[in-house]
Image 1 (cartoon, rainbow over the protein chains, first blue to last red):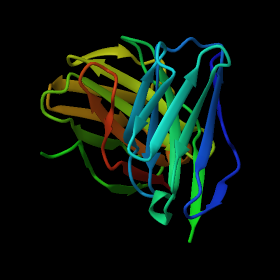
Image 2: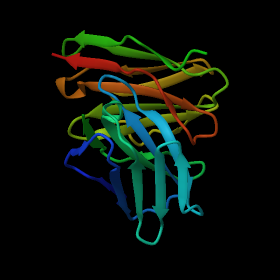
Image 3: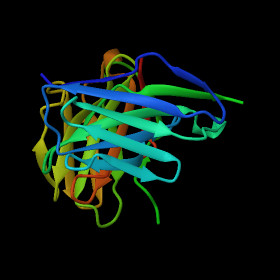
Image 4: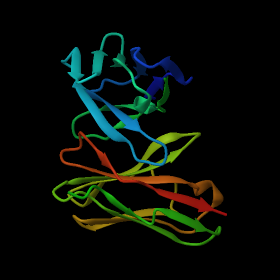
Length: 111
Length: 112
């Protein structure tokens, strides 16, 4: 069955450093991959989408890579800030089909 | 522009009672999703609709759960009878084309 793995342990980093979150998957061939941010008591918020034929995507301080050979996506936040502290979810999808979400990784940025 | 609207935001009920959760998707979106989130199981898709038609309800836990979408601007998720293990946060999300999903604030359900 499909399996999506994200860092189970919380990631603690110092303000100004680059945070790197990992999303690995098995038994799945997604057409695209998305990253969402979720703050406590709120619904997930879409951040970035990357398609299977794209290697890398950037948006401001965010960068996502997608390696379909390794079956892995990396999500980077450069110059991290305490306001970036949240849970980050990766989600895999195929056109015309539903998204499958990972369990999420908690990021804590300390000043 | 209003996002996805869910009501109620919090619901506390007793085991055996009927619970109805409501969702108003973003105007113009043609897909609607109901999710359940718990610490143990994460974010699980229960059911999704495309153009008001249920497409995949394989995530609905059992017959106690039902969902309807009578029109493009309204959907309900009903649990009858409710059980303590149904306690979770229920999210509704909508999208245009099923890619980027916009989530509502969620309904926090506690079944005693």
